[in-house]
Length: 148
Image (cartoon, rainbow, N blue to C red; front, side, top):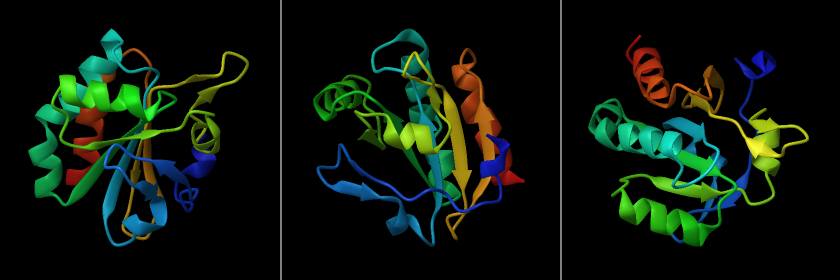
């Protein structure tokens, strides 16, 4: 929802493929991209993850951390990360509670939307891009926001 823009990003804790619990508060002082995606190993999600992978140096050069979030298990995320050599962490939101906080859950269907957020160093949401069908467009839109 647009009401999230220019407001503090909702705090959360989720298990990470790094083997630790990710806590958003630990990103204070860093620019962060949280990208929510429907499901590991599906065509659009592979395209999106691999496009983030291919552009990761551009994000790193601008001191931006990237994290992917879906309802998949940590085990599935680890397999997905390994198969596509993803150089960023994936977070497991099994019950969809974090997706719900970020307006990234389709009600009734209980499916995660394809939504990306740019969060500044003070943990304020500065930009949201939502497009279920244009997976690669998320990366270009976010790069444009970070550069501007």
